Length: 235
Image (tube, rainbow, N blue to C red; front, side):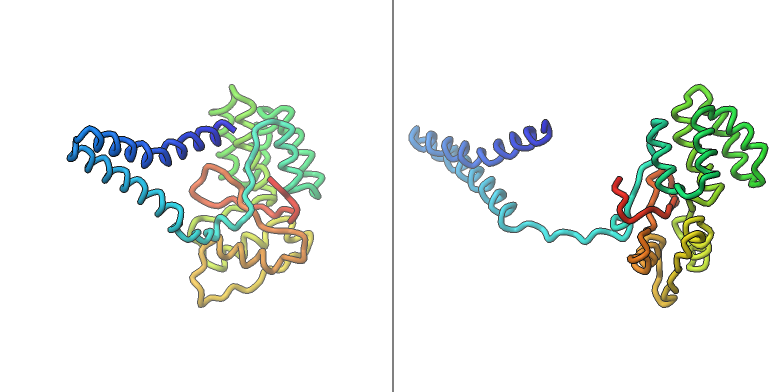
């Protein structure tokens, strides 16, 4: 509401400028200040021209990029919201959901044990680094580490900015919801230079009747985190 009032005041000020300078031109004309009157009239016409251009010559709306067409969901920070987030991306996996609940109840102890249990050394290193960095702030520890737990158990996927078709398909096929629901992966046209968002849109097109879609997880990363979520999900 505050932004709307501010914008309204700005527009009102701009639209009043031609009238203000026009009035100044009239007053200076009455006083015989011809040169100043001429300058004021030019300024009034200039602002009037800018306003008319903005009204009648609006730029054509830009087409959204492929990345903007994909559903994007945020990783929340609060415990109950993180649990709801995990439910959206991995609700059918009861074992994983139990692990998520345990991680939220005692994240330090859980991730210490998970660091020892996991066979993925990259993920183990991530758990170690997160514990070192966020052990004084459990909310941030949960927020930043839960995606890696979900990734470890294939509820989330990860793709670099530039991937070939084989790697994109392989990563999607490895996700648990794709496996559980037998979601088909369409063949990508190799004559087209796919980037990751375009490839994901192609997959979503093939899944229209499945009830699921691929979404981007909005993490602070130069790469793409992806999840399979219900079509009706609204962030």
